[in-house]
Length: 271
Image (cartoon, rainbow, N blue to C red; front, side, top):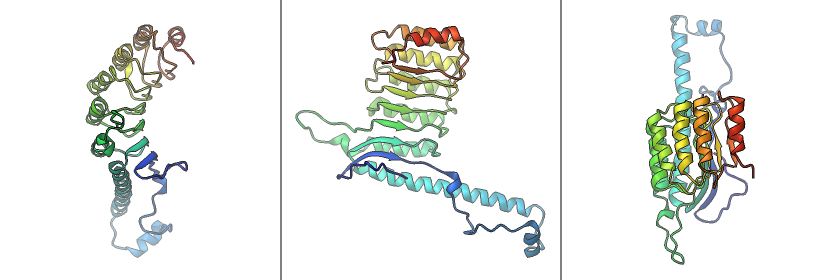
């Protein structure tokens, strides 16, 4: 777990939190880098059957996975303890960490019960929890996991940035629920949905959100299997929001024709 060098260390305030899992950094479970050859291994264990070595390798792999999961859980426990005692955490980066649905549920609960939810009034204003950026992409969340996020977005969120790249295990109904929750959202300005297998149907659902939402300014939809049908839905949505145009829209790696892509980009204001 790593924190920004510019972190404000005043009480109850954390501005930035990044959690990353690096599989290659796991120590050798035996505590040694020395590996026995097949000959020496057999000599030490003359009664070993042919399948024993495979089972040993499997057990070692399972130990590695268990160690990784335990390490992730420990780091998340520390992070959630900070969330429970802090009134300001602006950025959580949990991309590619192995975050499961169960851990996401714990995280959402920690966010909901942050002290900032019950801060006293200052000049008649109740200052809400100030988490502004959340990136949980690349974790293989399921439909249930995305629904947990949707519940948080509906009731507690003031996010400005949401990263959901490579969220590939979600069905269309769960995406529909999330996108519906964003229609009336007034704070989210940037969403990352790259490589999430949305396809034309998902693009249509997201286009409905674009028609209604007025806060989004930057959208990333790279490599989602979107073709002409989905591209047509997107251009129609952009034509409906000329009063609040997107400043950035990325659709690289999709099956949209050059002509249609040109029309789409004409509706994006790069300023």
